Length: 337
Image (cartoon, rainbow, N blue to C red):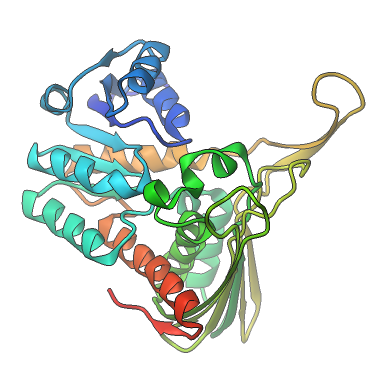
């Protein structure tokens, strides 16, 4: 990448998340970024990551003194401590989702960042995908008419990180598949339509012996204009599925229909020999996380909010919290922001 844009100094706060390598690779390879280093509460994990990308493992205080922005890639339940530390240091923040696993913390983190006048962005890549961008343009042009129903899917394989990693450990994840996958499609509906989810009825189940939390879920929601919105966010794809999962949205209106497949740019590869025989779907489209990071870095340079910010994170986390309340009570629950 060649650029004449101002270089932004960036560090990583924690390397616990499965997306750490993806963002670290971008930070290392971009010419408009100085990748300063890593801070981690797991020294061995942090050192391995720092060495892999040719940067230093630093204390949190030293790293925050050297950077303009950070990526928070911690476990879900520890986002708060990293966000608070960065905000106190006046450092802009790009945080993994969900913003928090309880509503009080999510509200607090938004307020902390606003009071400190630092930008708080969310690692929510779907609005930056080409299919989602086309869908929003079509929706805003009136191609749909009046929205009548929305249905979405964000399913994934029950991968090792779910079976043995922290994503299925309530202590670190704050939940299971609901906490992991709800925010993406809820965020996409909010971003395209401008509407909020006002209530949710959740049905949860555990299909496998491994996870301590739900790996199957269906959410029946209502938008603020009364439109029904359903979401399947399950970890139910078999191990031999041809792709990691999906992220799709179908919007039906009085004048038309909009179908969004955020990872539609794939072709199927079939092998009958080698180490990985079988059918595999290979993605060849633009990587949404590149555009997401572009937007965040430009927000830092231009002193503006990122396109997907902390208030979006608050609203989407609120849906997750309400979904768990609904499952516990066995009835629909209104969303509180």
